[in-house]
Amino acid sequence: MITSLLVANRGEIACRIFRTCRELGIRTVAVHSDADANALHARVADAAVRLPGAAPAETYLDAGLIVKAAVVAGADAVHPGYGFLSENADFARAVLDAGLVWVGPPPEAIEAMASKTRAKELMGLAPLGEVTEADLPVLVKAAAGGGGRGMRVVRHLDELDAALQSARSEAASAFGDGEVFVEPYVENGRHVEVQILADTHGTVWPLGTRDCSLQRRHQKVVEESPAPGLPERLTDELHTLAARAARAVDYVGAGTVEFLVAGDQAHFLEMNTRLQVEHPVTEAVFGLDLVAEQLRVAEGHALETEPPHARGHAVEARLYAEDPAHDWAPQTGTLHRFAVPDSVRLDTGFTDGDEIGVHYDPMLAKLVAHAPTRAEAIRKLAAALERSTIHGPLTNRDLLVASLRHDEFTTARMDTGFYDRHLTDLTEPIPDPYAPLAAALADAHGRSRFGGWRNVPAQPQVKRYTMAGEETEVRYRHTRAGGLEADGVGVVHADARLVVLEVDGVRRNFEVARYGDEIHVNTTRVTALPRFPDPTAQHAPGSLLAPMPGTVVRVAEGLAAGAPVQAGQPLLWLEAMKMEHKVTAPSTGTLSALHATPGQQVQVGTLLAVVDSNAP
Image (cartoon, rainbow, N blue to C red; front, side, top):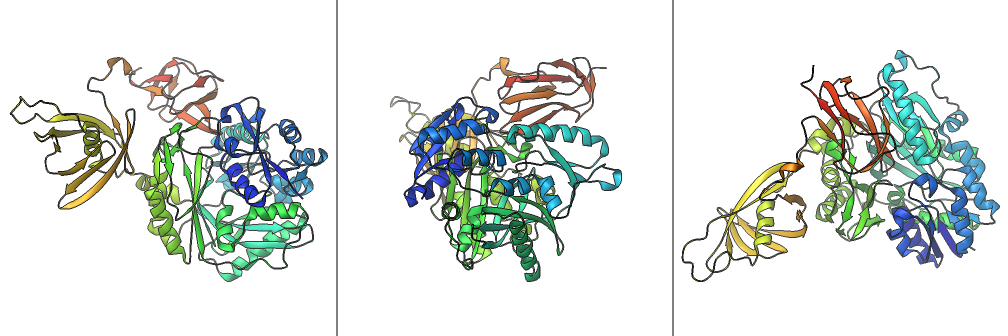
């Protein structure tokens, strides 16, 4: 009987596992890096143990430290969550060798399936050896881990070496294992997977299908269960293949077998020997708590002969702190306010006032909607996202809403190329034109500009803002009665938090929240501009500024000031939130300055290099 559980992970998944433990009466233990000292998962656990340092390699990827933490805290079991060490057989053995219960598959099963190269061999497949033009496009893929890290699509042979190097570096940072391999890349297939749950008594449950085709950087963004539109024959085939893979390695616990479906053909991708990020859609459809089932299996209990029946449809969206319109750049800062309608399930590792840092994945939360039909589930999830309060760094919320309402998704015609085709349209800003006026009126509330001696109309007040990257100017006036007015718009009410405007006979409410110069008006974000801009804040044309805080991991070989560069040429790479981000030359010219050096920590706006497009 498990009485105390340590979760060898952080953030959303740790909080989600702790929730089930509380319901079962199991004491919880968190581990945290120095960067996560005040993180939500460390605060909600019954006990927390510090892992000194901030980088994943010296904290969450240090198996010895985590096992020691479990022993010190008096835990009798360890759950790996997902990511980090969740598919590391040596970590599983270390847990077992310490006399603790391992909530996961046997180390031998992890070894057989966690390495994608060995898994393919087990399924009678093999990675590509020597890559030729005829093999293109190909996919460079990390042998360990998942989540889209250590993956690169290569369409030209001369890009292969750089892709291999970049993938190895990213995989080593994320998983502590830099092994990569190359396989054929299937264009525009559907990513479909089968949830597996197995016990120690020989029972294997295939728990339906999930479609995870909406992906960015090979990382899933929207997932649903069941996968829509699959022929019954193909669904049965996927279930059979998934169960066969589990039985081939005597699998125990929760796992996922992933496929790429093209037409009516299924291509095996990998088996993830852990819980998946998207497991809540399966829980919703089957009425299960997969974490509770994992714990029961780890205690030796047997599953029922047959799994429960599926009902309805569930859709999940991953909310990230990122800018989809600018190469999915991760965002950092304070999450001032975060609230989601209770019509959907929320799994998160953040709450009001938490800091979103640079060290880990930028996922803030998962929102999950369940309904009798797919159309109803999509509608419910889109509306909940739209009505959520998210004050802080930029997120992909608008992209998620637009994706869920896109015709290609609502009619289940999507595939893994969805964002390649539609990203520009989906990220076209649609700001509320009245948001800057509402911000100005809220700020002006109670600020009368004249006294009783003045008997002439007030002059218009002018304020400037940026919204969706564009500068805008608004004008309003204080009335003699102490109110506010604006041309063409009726000001029904205005205070610091709520502005009510009447436009063409229709009243609209605008909730306003201000954090310094950052202002949120309903779901639109505006930034107040100073009356007199600082002339010292300008940079020379061609300046390359760090788009995010992070670490310079490398500079292009042989690059130095004075070198000629071509537009789009990679100059250097930044690592932030466990992903590598390429910084390229904005134009053809001469590199007139290079300030970045490998290992350098940079903040947003740090000058990295300057490209002079006018130089000979």
